[in-house]
Amino acid sequence: MSRRANAFMEENTAAGKPFFIQLSYYALHYPQNALASTWQAYENRLTGHSYREINRAAITEDLDTGVGMVMDQIEKLGISDHTYLIYMSDNGASGRGRGVLRGGKGSLWEGGIRVPLIIQGPGIEANSVCHERVVGFDLFPTLCELGGVSQPLPAGIEGGSITSLLSGGKGAVERPHEELVFHFPHYQSGDRPHSAIMLDDYKLIKLYETDKLHLFDLSKDMGEKNDLADRKPEVVAKLHDRLNAYLASVDAQMPQPNPNYDPSWPVGGRRGRNNRRRRNQN
Image (tube, rainbow, N blue to C red; front, side):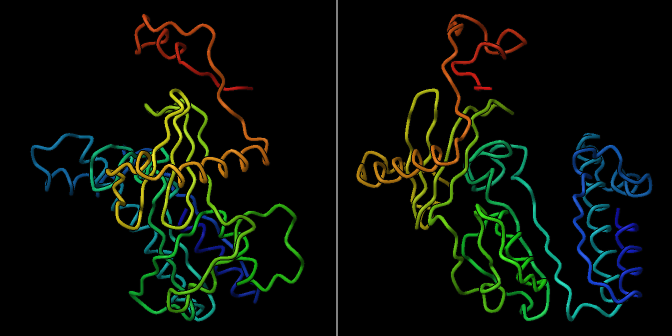
C-alpha cells in the first residue's frame, strides 16, 4: 500500500497536479501477515511470549515502516511545505483494562472513541499539542478548506473545519450542532446497544437494555470512573433531551425489545447470541 501511494505521489508531483490519498492500513487486523524477517526478529527478542504477541509486535513494526515510507517520500519529492499528513485510528484498543480509559473497540466509552490523531503540515509546530475535541467527520470540511474548495459544501454536513487549531492548537470548531453524538444500537464484541452525547465537559451515556443513564465530567475524569448522574440530575435531563432530539432528527436506527427474550437461556453460543433483550430494528 505504501509503495503504491508513493508511486501515485511521484506521478502527480511530476505532472504538477494536487492529490489526495487515503491509506486505510489493515495490518493489525491480520497480524499473522507480518514480514517473515520482522517476525523472526521478534521471535528472537520475545522468547517465551505467545505467537499472538510476536505476530502483533511484528506487524506493528511493519505498519510503522509503511508510514515511514510515505513520510520519507514526501520529503524526497520536496512537497512537505504544502502537503498535510494526517494519521489517526478508527477506534480504540480491542482489549479492555489496558490503560486508564474505560472500554475499547465497539464501545462508546472513552477507550472506544478517544483515538490518536497526529497531523503534520505547513504551519504546524513540531511537538505541539491540541486538547480541543475533534471527530472524524471534521476532516471532510477541513480538507476542503485546505484544498481551496470554493463551492458550498453539501447540506447536512455535520463536521466543522479544524484548520483554526492547526497553528498553535487553540481555537474553536464550528459545527451545525454544539454537541457530539455517538450512537451504537447493536450488539458487538461484548458491548450492548448504547448512545453517548458530549457537551462542554460532560458526557452522558445511555444503555438501552436498562435505560440507565451515566454522567461523567471528562475534564476531571477521563477514565469515566466517577458517575455523576445522581448528583447532577439537571445536567442528565438536559443532555438526555438533546440526545433524543438529535437521534430523532436524523431518524436514527433504534434497538427494539426482543419479544422472544428468555432470561433463563445461556448467554454464550448461537442460542445466546439470538437471546438479546433488545434487537436491531431493520
